[in-house]
Image (spheres, rainbow, N blue to C red):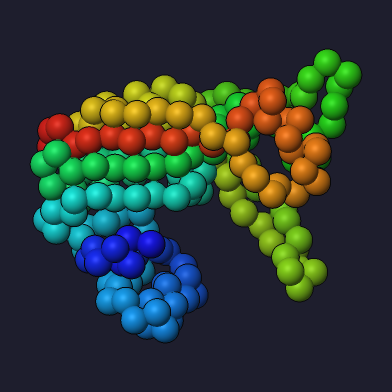
Length: 192
């Protein structure tokens, strides 16, 4: 989307298949896109680049240390640069995968501890089972951690997810108790 607005865009992902997909779509659409395979906890190859904006889709749930992530983002932003990040809500992540209704609400089964990790298993399109490690981060880590890393929060919002597994009625009901995402918009005010 940003490339279509004639912005110079760098796409960063740990997965080489995703980087390849980004590059092929950009080429097919005629956009110039720099694609970098890197871990978001080590952006050293981009340090000193002074980006105006870092946009991070929901992905902090895959790293054990959100403060380290924020510090790395701060190192690649210019002074007063902007950081837009979306996170799974910690409360939503604490719910059990099958979302059983207790008659009064939904049970929280994951401890509210920043960096707490667990393995979840999902079926893939081809029927295979895939494992993924998820990490919960507290509101203090997600929001306060931004301030600790030299950011000023400009906007915060909760957002509901759409099209989740389990059918629209179940997920819609769950999200009346726990919206799925937190959206943060922050500005770099000091060096990390």
